Amino acid sequence: MIGDVIVAILGVGLIVGELWYFLGPQPGSKQPTRSDDVQEIRVVVRDGYDPDTIFVEAGRPVRLLFHRDETAECSERVVFESLGIDQVLPAFETTAVEFTPSAAGDYPFRCGKSVLRGRVVAQIGRDGARANLGKGHDKHA
Image (spheres, one colour):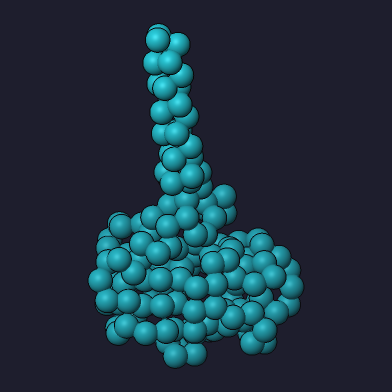
């Protein structure tokens, strides 16, 4: 009888631990930063953009922290044509790109040679930014 209770308690403990491991906060993941009401997302540039689709809330300032983790000529720049942004990305450095999406919709971005592509998806309401949970890389802070 006591053995059954111990086995049941251990089983419940293992289930809770497994759920926490898979569904709880992941090491290195962060919510978009809420300071100054700015939505901050880290983007690693290496053979592409990671993440390459970024969800934000329309009407709130966005700060994308591009960390260029390579020296490939293609990734020297990031261009947001619809926003008039053309920013140099020095190799092995983090560069902030800031803007405020005035309306809901897609804001595509690309490298200087149009090989690497990504997009910012501005949505109505705060739930849009929650889609970024676990995206980007804190190691490149």
